[in-house]
Every structure is written in C-alpha cells, then in structure tokens.
Length: 481
Length: 100
Picture 1 (cartoon, rainbow over the protein chains, first blue to last red):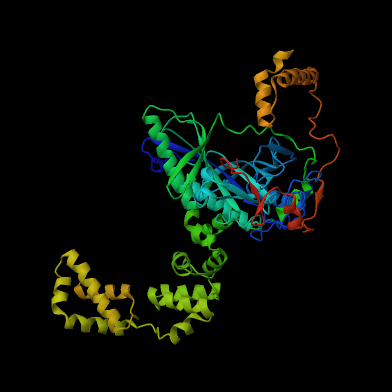
Picture 2 (picture 1 turned 30 degrees about the vertical axis):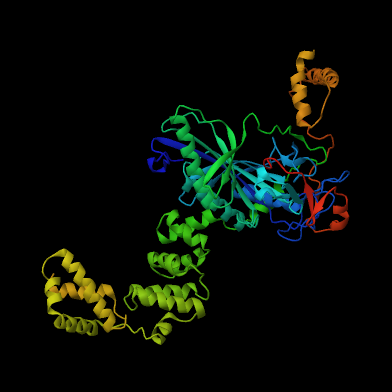
C-alpha cells in the first residue's frame, strides 16, 4: 500500500503490519461435535466427549462451518480449495486433547484480497478452519497470570468453530490496521459468518509489527502482539510497539523475534516468549478426518447466495452521490445506503443526504422513507426550511413518518417570504445604527462579527424561522456590496 | 545411518512430547528413529513425480454432519472424573505463560 510519509509513526521509519484475525463462526453446534456453540451459559454445560477430548471420541465435521468458511473465502476473493485438517500439538490445560485441530499446509481458502473503505486493497494470505480452546480463569495471586495460585477451566468454548484470517503485511499505520479490522468485521457480519464482537472475544486480533527505515526494501524482525481486545487497543499497541522497536535499533540494539502481550492498563507490550522459546507444534495430518473438497456446485451455490458486500455498497453509493468511497463508507456502515441511494434517485441533493445521515441519523432512520427524505432535502435546498428546521422535521419523520411539508407546517415552520424577511432586517438595521456602521466600515473582521450579530437578532425576532444565508444576502445588499 | 538424527534431536522431541527418557532410552530411540527415517529415505529415492500426494488412506472426502444440536454430557458426571473441581470448573495447577 502507500508509502505516504504521513503514515510514519516515528519520522523516517516505516511500520509494517500484518494481522491475524480469529472469528468464531455463527453455527449452532461445534466444529467437530453436536454440542451447542453458545456464548455465556453455565460453565461446562455445552460439552460432550469430543469437546472434552475423552479417549475414544472422534471428530465429525460440521457442514455449516464449512459453508460459512466458504462464504468468508469468497467474500475475501480467495481460492476455495481442497483442504486437509492437521493436528497442532502443544500442552495447555484449555485444550484437553493436547492438540488443536487446525489446517496447516492445505487451508480451505488461500490468496485473496480485501478492499478498505478508501479503495486500497490488502492481501489475504489464507483463511482456514480450526477449533477454539476452552477458557481458563486464573485464580489467586492477584489474578495475574504469572502469579496465579491455580487456574479454573471451562470447556464450553472448546471446539467452537473458528476461521483464522491471515492478512498480508500490507498495512503501514494504526489507522490502516483499524480500517482493516472494521472492514473485515463488516464483511463477516454481512455474510452471517460471525457476530464480530471483539468485546465478547468472538473476534480476536493478533498483530505482527516490524519497522524499517523508510526506503528499505528488506523487512525488519517482527514481533507478534497478543491480547488485543478492541480497535482502540490495536492502534495503541501498534504505536507503542513501533516506537519500542525503533528505540532499540537507534540505541544500537537488535529487535528480537518475540511473541508479546499487550497490557491495556499499562499501555505497553511485554515479552511472552522469544523465538528460541517459540512453540514447536509438530503439525501432522489429522488421521481422524478425511479431506474437505467442496464441489464447484457447492461453491457456486454459496457464491450465488452471498449478500451485497460493503465494498459494492460503498461503490454504488459513491457513484450515486458523486463522492469517493471513503466519504460513502459511514452511510454504508450505518446500513442507510439503500435509503440514501433511493433518496438521491428521487432527486435529493446528495451532499445534504449524506450530511443528514452522518449528523442527524446516528440512531437509525426509523420511519423515514426515501421519498419523504428526498422531499425534505428539496424543501431545505429550495430555502423553504433552514438547516436547523430541516433537522427538527427529520427527527419527527424518523419518529413517526409522515409528509415533510405537513410536518413543517405543524411545527410552524412556514417559509418566510423575502419581503417579510427584508422588513425584519431593515427594522433591526434601523434599531442598531452603531452596529450597522461597524458592519459597513469596510473592516472585514468587524463585518464578520456584526454579520453574526444581525443574523442572531433576526433569528431571535423570527423564532429561528429565517434562513441565515438569506439574511446575509439581504445585509450585503443593504450595505451596497 | 545414525547421522540422520542426533541424540539432541531425540531429547528435544521427547521434551516436546513431555517424555522423560533415561540416557539408555535416548540411545535406543535415537537408533530406532534413525531406522524410521531410513525407511522414509527409501521412499524418497523413488521417482514419484506422477503420484498424487496422499494425506489419508481412505478414498473418502467431505464426511460432514448437519449443524443440529445434540445431547450434551452431564456436568456432574463429567466433573466427577476430574481430580480437582472448583466453581463447576476443572481446577488445574497454576498455568505458566499463556495459551499459544
């Protein structure tokens, strides 16, 4: 992506970021057994012999998990292919089998891309299926992991299907990383693959960060940051880690390849393990599962059923409104792009439509229809309503629907005709000769100040019904400018 | 062909598998693992350009089940198998570090 100097966290240094996102798939059951996939609930109630890793239990793959994985792959423009499950071996009490079933050299989805809101593309290396682990809670020793007295394990989450999406190291700053996660979450939610809730842990982000002098082609040594629980933490962790690595290098030291833990309270990362201590997972093909090789028909039927994705929706609105995709993105995020496109199609001024969506419809469009939205914007642009009045009418339409002209009339927002407004302005000029003298003195600063004074007086005199722009035009005419 | 794998390699693999091997066992397994690797080397010597890599001996694929919730285990029964229980959870010794 861009080498824009404004993305530098430390001047003269480029940060290179690649994200690994784990998302829990929205299935009814676990990846390899029919125990419920459900968040919350009493500890150790959504378990069965497979999730507990009991001897003799055997995994059987969930068809819906594969279907959702295919949706993810297609949405990220990946090649959906024959894949094989593998055992990732390590010992940890939240994984009772002592191995996690994942995918290794043959993931179900490979080599795709995702477009960010501003139109830039980021590479997607792979998106593979794996099972989640149980949840351990550390008790005693103040609750901190390294001082824990003992741990308690709940296996409700063990075996929940995950999709791990590995992004290319194409991101360069905290904003890029946040934009990437936001877009990915929007896609996952839109296709019904995951609820994307970072705060509930159903979407988790690991972040690989390295730095290099601007202009260098060779990548620096990277560190992987874990325990990032919000978009805010993601940004903070990237800035902290970039500075830490640049400080090391400029002090003549070297960055060691490490896995690091983000501490939100302290605002810093600390070392979990070095490269030498890195886990050696000894992957091998899972003998209890056969390959998954979705047919062309299956893949195409999944593709045909995909909803319109955020990217296409941004492009559609951007084209309708004559703006860029970044400007269109908030309206799409709010799910009001259909409303906006229809209102614009009905003749509404695109700029006013987008302004209203962004500033006045944050809590939803309620009973507002595209036709009444368009009619309201037309009244506003035509000078029948001031911006303030339009906002009030809009709120009424959202709450209860109706015809904007009737609503405006009910609210007493009759358009003032030009003659009535002129007479109000003339009366005020006559009543405030010193202010008027200052207005016409030729001093720009005085003129601006007094323009505010007169507009304020007019608004007061008309109970806010006057259009500020029209008042200024009359003032200018009267001053002979 | 014992140079296929060193005693240190075997000690490392044993450590990863949480096996506590004696010096004699290390010696014995180093020889045995070297034999296994020799066998793999025999296969590697064959011309297999036209042979599809095989990840599973069964001629099956796409063994799938519908996403329908079934029976869960009885918690009391499950926890009764655990050496230590607290708050309806499995109690385990203090865990050093974090899950990978």
